[in-house]
Amino acid sequence: MILLVRYTAAFVIALCLGKALSKCRLPAILGWLIAGMAVGPFGFTVLNSAILETPVYETLMCIIECTVGLLIGSELVWKKIKAAGLQIFITTLTQSVGTFLIVSLVFTLAFYTAGIPVYIALILGGIALATAPAPALSIVQEFKTNGPVTKTLIPMAVLDDMVGVVIFFTVIAAVKMHLAAGAFSPLIIPLIIVLPLFIGGIAGVISGFIMQKTNSLAALCINLCISITAAAAIGIYVNTSIFAKPVLNFMLIGMAYSALFSNMIPEEKLEKLMHRVNPVISLAMTAAILNLGAPLNYRLIFGAGFFTFLYIASRAAGKYFGARFGAALMHSPDPVKKYLGLTLLPHSGVSLVFTGIAVSVLSGSVPQYAQLIQGTIAAAAVINEIIAVIAAKKGFELAGEITGRETLQER
Image 1 (tube, helix red, strand yellow):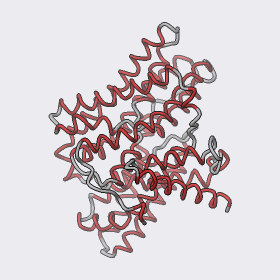
Image 2: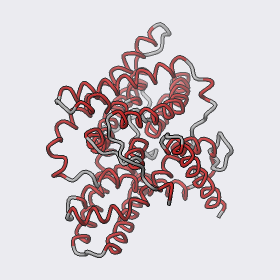
Image 3: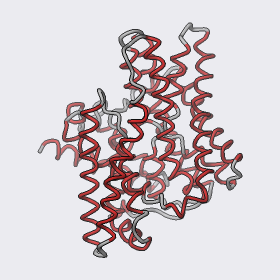
């Protein structure tokens, strides 16, 4: 009961702050993020560490992440994306690999004089390439963005996560073997990618067959609620049973689920269903961003050092110029070349998960480098997320894709 009261209070604070900032022509997500930091363990502790670590809260967040994934998956209708498939794939590779290479190279040079091993630079590069899709997607929903940047970004979120997992865990495997910190099964990399897609895909196929047999909007919504919850439950079981640490991406489960059923039902039926559930997705988006901000310590802004600012700058350069290079290579529209990179800057959710894994690998053998990575990324997560949200909104604005505001704040 206390958990419910505290979380409801935190959620209402986030909505109010989001509405206040939207009145100032800033994205509501910035208010949700700041609210998360304010009510979290390093703020007023409305959501303290004990609450954030309870099984009930963690389960709720898994379901919420799956729900947010519906927004991406429902846009992955094959006949819409097949023409741009190669363009999206190449651009994803150039911005992901480009970010990894630039951050790794910059830190290799920076660490050379300090006598810090090259593999620490590679770990930072592996962490840097990850993109958190929820912030940019919340702007898509709030401002009803539409155009080539939006149409490229949404399917790219799926591929970007896969590339990030492959590169990061390949680096971690190599570092673990170098430090002789225990066996690292090469199977873990494909498992982390395939399992969420498999779980969501199976649920999506079953749900799609049921949806084909009914035209009742209420029945469609009930089917969606039951099946997405079931997919999340299976994901939670797998996540806690197979892996030493929870590493599955539940947003990917939601993406795979909605992508499958979206390709199995008529477009008109899909549009009616998504229009009905969009208010729920909007609320889930608020909850996801609130959760993203809660573990961030705003005090780290004041103690951020040279490595933190180097990380933010090199990552931004990798994302922007990597996306620009890929878009130019594939002769994408000018707005994609110029502004897609700005929408890829949000980072913190995935980066904190990767950082936790890296720290656990390094702590036993080289704890000083574990602390270096933890301090650099934690401070960067706070600073970058505020900058990135504003930059992402500006990217859509400069691309001419902001058409209006979602009415969540008025509901």
